[in-house]
Amino acid sequence: MDYKDTLNLPKTDFPMKADLPKREPQILKKWEGLYQRVQTARKDAELFVLHDGPPYANGHIHIGHALNKILKDIIVKYKLLRGHRVDYVPGWDCHGLPIEQQVEKELKAKNLRKEHMPKTAFRKLCRDYASRFVEIQKEEFI
Image (cartoon, rainbow, N blue to C red; front, top):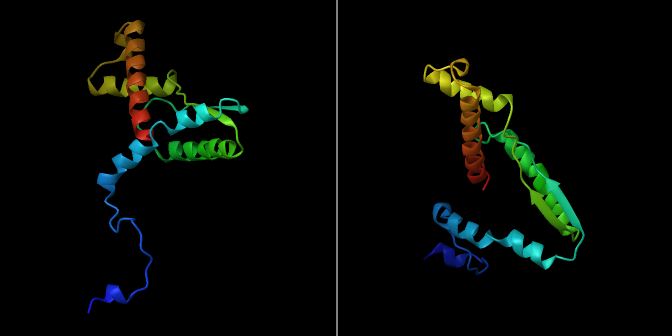
């Protein structure tokens, strides 16, 4: 006797196995472009703009970034549920001391110092570093 036949369970197409590594790319594909479709459908609705940021583009994301994004996502979803057209604009802080400190750490690991290079060269290193981490963080946020 098979005991599963003795249970009164609902019939569903929902898979018994989550199989997340296989299914997550399919789920992400399904959600791709949804934001733009909602924007198009609500072209006449009142506009709410949320400028997000700035996380510094000086490393990988961490739990503080997650808290920041979750709180802002709640605001965006609330406004969407209230019927607004929401323009979410992500941003990064790509200048200043946090990025310079990270570049200096990389230089120190190579036995180099910013004092021994032209300021324009150091600025270029900072710009390249920030650009690299903006792309990395975009991927990590997805």
